[in-house]
Length: 265
Figure 1 (cartoon, rainbow, N blue to C red):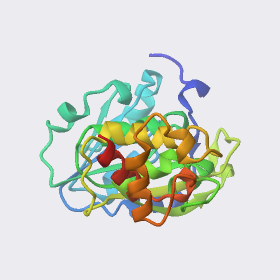
Figure 2 (tube, rainbow, N blue to C red):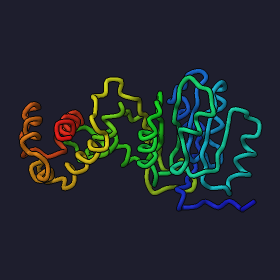
Figure 3 (cartoon, rainbow, N blue to C red):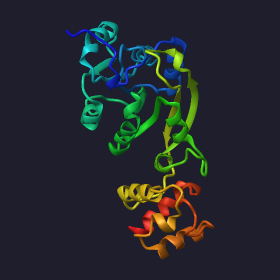
Figure 4 (cartoon, helix red, strand yellow):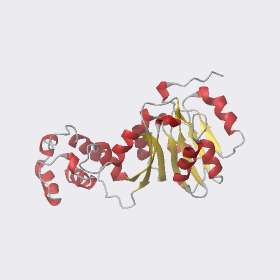
């Protein structure tokens, strides 16, 4: 058994305020007989409230730091609906892991380590698992980017991609003083629900490439950023939405990028 010390490399900042923790658990609004995925349970501060609030559901938690094993297991020993895997979530076979459980709906609820926020989201997307709701606490600046509107300074490739897949809602801000150790930034709790009316993508990977290429140089127009593609076809789509090739990517909604990627692929 190793001695636990807070590790900066794992982004370990534990939320202390029980009211805020309970509020995060409540925002998830988990339905009966569900499976809840959590990444980075730490000392179980959110894990236990999730298990208590949703007694007929299971919590599957991934923890990368095995030095937390004695602390975490001591805290959850009385809960038969908490299951911990000491594993790197980003390397885990999520589909195989969830197949071991019988559940009606799947949820993701976590105070995620900030340095892997975006990789976690893309792992959830790439898994093709259907999540009823995703609730995560992230760095406020990142949350602002997730929720940004078209033409705002925070609007970028990540905003476009996530808005294709999800309806995104900023739930509430959490002050940095609520954590130990205290981080240098405030946080925000954000929820994601699947878009039921998603437009069909011919090739999702090509869509990601088009979006990233469009924002490659943020102050340049699509004419410049997408010059290696068929500009006539791109112009056809832009005209449909009332734009031309001199528009910047930041002015376009995710729907425009869906149509551009589909016509080009």
